[in-house]
Length: 317
Image (tube, rainbow, N blue to C red; front, side, top):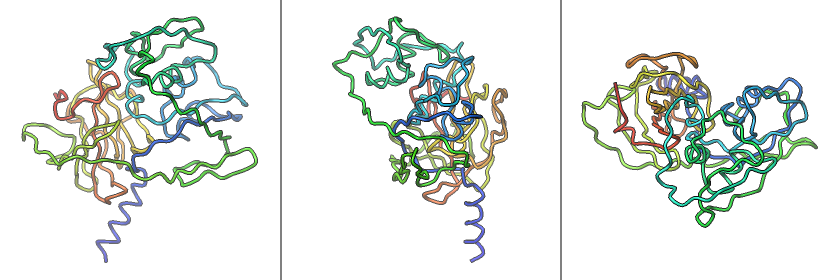
């Protein structure tokens, strides 16, 4: 009984350590007085850079009460790409061989153009040698994936008006005459592969983990851990993002000198802040508790130009 009670306390204490992987449809948000891009990004558990990209906003743009903003679908690969330092080298996506030209129209955003043409924002940026802070202009020519291979987007949107209440990840949003109910009871869609054996010389963020592959759009590995185990940096670099990211709990992005982003997700606590330079072996935080299995573990992903690469083969120090 005592062990069960302590286990439950640990899970409650790490409320945001890890939540199920799921995706949300785009929504529209009406800005209220006092809102900032940061506060809105925290409300929807995405990054400020994603908000800017989805609404064609520069770092100097100021939002105003009554303004409508697109809240993009959470995509940790896009978040990682947009968190990358602008000086990082980008490469043309290998999976895009046929391209056509697109002329930017009034109201276009990088996010909208990418989605409409079956691409991701990182792919669009890389294909056009653009950095993550770019603001596109009407009449500008962009290369896009050939329309014959593009997937038609889902244009359905749900409009949401902000409230002054604290917004946590719950099953629904309260409905008023100006709000549309959002059902967030989306099933856990994590798809696991096999537990893999790696060379003992391969360094992981936690000690001697069981390594299980995670399939899907944000592929990576699930690493078993001890309760509140130290999560360590395996490649030195700059902390580009710290925060709760939708579907992944507390996340830390570390960018190496060659532009690779190392994503440590599902953390129980975080001990670094954006802008810190961390060395190999430095503690980033502690392991969290998985909401589905109830076991202490983290998710580890590595991205280059917004595309996942094999965490086993990713460079270490």
